[in-house]
Amino acid sequence: MKASEFISFPKINDIEIMHKLKIETIPLWGSMHSQQMIEHLTDAIMLSIGEFESTVFTEKEKVDKIKRMFIDSDLPFRKDFKSPIFRGEGIIFRNPSLAVAIKELESYIVKFEAYYNINPNKTHVHPVFGMLSKADWERFHSKHFTHHFKQFGLVS
Image (tube, rainbow, N blue to C red; front, side, top):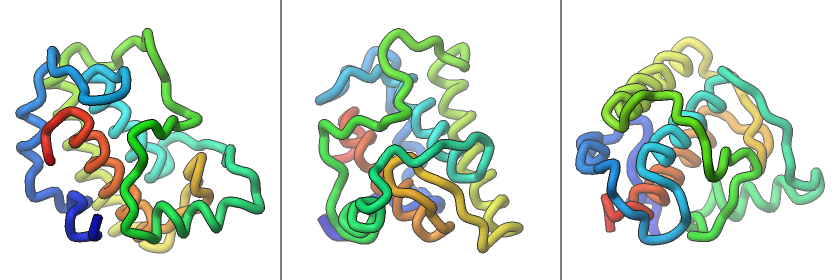
C-alpha cells in the first residue's frame, strides 16, 4: 500500500465516511462494534495529544525497528493486530450513541490540529511504537483510521 492510499490525517477529506457507519454495521474482521471503533480512534487521538499517558509495552531494543516497520513504511496495519491498551469486549461506551461518538471524534481531530499548532515539537508515548512526534502521530493516525475504516467496509 502506498502512503497515498491511506486516509489523510488530520485533514481527512472524507470525514463524512464516518457518517455512513451504522450501529449495526458488522466488521469484516475482529470483534469491535462500530461505536467501540469510533471511541477507540478517539482514544488514540487523546493519547497523541497527551490527554492520557501510556507506557511502552514493546521491548526497548525493538521499539525503533518496529516503528520503522510500521510507522515509517508504507505497510498497512495487520488485520489481527491487538493493541496492548485496547479496552476489549464488554466495554461501557462513554458516549450515549454512535452519532455522539462520531461528533466527539470529529472534535478531537480539530483538537489534534490545534494542539500541534501550539506545540509543534511536543512528543507523546505510543504503547507499541514509543515516543512519537507530530509527524509520526499523523502517519500513525492515517494508517489507524484506514485500518479501522477498512475493517468496517467504509473504504476499500
